Image (cartoon, rainbow, N blue to C red; front, side, top):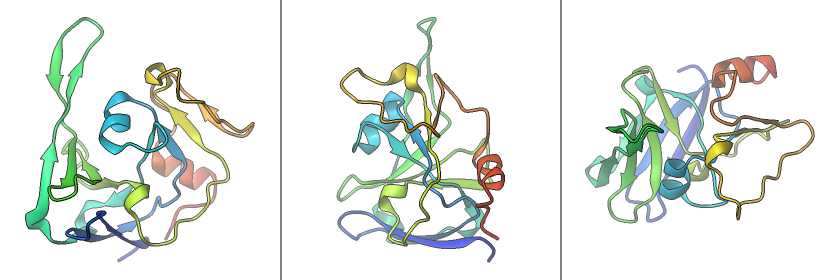
Length: 165
């Protein structure tokens, strides 16, 4: 299995998982309302990238899936294709899977038990949705985006020499 092997778990321990990641650096902070409200902590969520074909799960019977409603600026409402997987015992959000990109799964850095590399810079995204009470703690080397960043997880890791073989 190529990439860095990551192990994670929910708060109560009912769900444990392992996954291989080429993009294991927790650098991208998302301030959208869905990430903030389903993941809590700090006013943002940090998702990593991993290979879906490497995901192994213990306690899968304790998993639930949440698909958020997205309200567009024109007032239309649609169901997100993203599936947020969580533990039905403790409510811990574990990873996001979107069938639009079936080869990927996005575990939350906050549930990874394996030590993660430190980010040399961070990317703050979806700032159009950040409430005023959340301070933006962007360092001079950080990048900020009103919505989506201009680089994918893979692009960022490769550009910083952090792609895990």
